[in-house]
Amino acid sequence: MNSSQDPLVLLRQAISSDSPCIPTASADAITNSSLATAAFLHFTSPVQLSLPLSTPTRFISKGKPVNLRSIYFAWLKKDTTPSEYNAGVQALNAELTEAGSTSELVEGLSYVERIDLTTYLEGGTEESEYIKALPADTSAALASAQVASGAAGGIAPVTSGLAGRQGKDIDPRLQEIYNGERRMGDRNSVLRGIKPTDFSHVRKMAAPFTARKAAQAAQAAKNTTLAQHPKAPVRRPDPIILLSPSASSLLRMSNIKSFMENGVYIPPESSSATSSSSASILHITRLLPGIDPARPMRFIIVDTPEQFKPEYWSRVVAVFTTGQVWQFKSYKWQEPTELFRHTLGVYLGWRGDQLPPTVKGWGRGVLAAQVEKWSQGASHASRWRDREIVEGIWKSIEENMRSKGWRRDSGPMVV
Image (cartoon, rainbow, N blue to C red; front, side):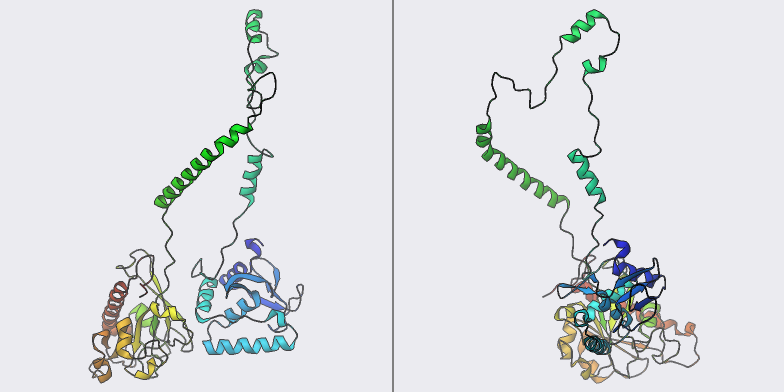
């Protein structure tokens, strides 16, 4: 399948152009059906095309391709919580089973797989560790093979001097000299004799020497290639920031982007908050010159580690806390002093309020910051001190990341 009919490419193009994708019961019917009864997904842009929902895609989960129905369902549920998404998968599979479509059940994706898929489909990245690259165009390779075999292309052979002079009027004496020329033979005719000679024994004698030479040449070429083209670095993972799910937290999913990206504090329940309070995953970008001065880093923000795999904990670079210990009951490190030896803690409170005793007791592993109390009707210009607080938090996050081994092309050191 070429790129113009690749399910992931088509879905990504449809999303970027805000064109509808329509689940349909048949390839030629353009009427909406539910995902439980539909058999095709009809794309309206950039081409009118219907693909079976059972089509395997380049997205690989648990070692096998995920079908188009699962990919489309994950996209539809991109803003739901992990528990809501999992419940939706179970409900849809129950409907499919009842309809007798057990061979087309939806594959439930993990928390991070959904993040990578959503980012790819929204155009935020061109690659993913879960998505196989499109196969390269083979037309150029085929043309080269035809030229090499002599079936096409190539350079016309040059005629000999004598053949080129035939048909021309030349001096008879010069013609006599030309007649004395001996034509050069090719490698098959240059060895003359009164009878054919078998040189196969020479080939056998030379075989050990040529094999040794070939091995030495191959090793030398390999060493040169490694020296000139060192092994490509592993793709740098996205760092993770954990928020407190507490209702008393000054920073929640609804206002974290305005604070950390724009340097302006807005109450989480405010109508001018930049994100939905029901969002389960957010992305923010930030340039950290001490780690990568050329490319901004993308941070993943979540308020629960419910879907974490063990290796994700090494990517956690900051934990925002209200000082309530129950926040850590599902963490890898449930003891606060142990947690903040592995990652940075951040406490944000109102200026002038007392620091909670629990936060004081956790020591230097927790950065305590305070913002001006919110006043209803205050303009953004009056919140000029917020940016100073945000810059201090980012500086601490960057220093902590550098100490954990984050570099321009690699993630943290795993110890």
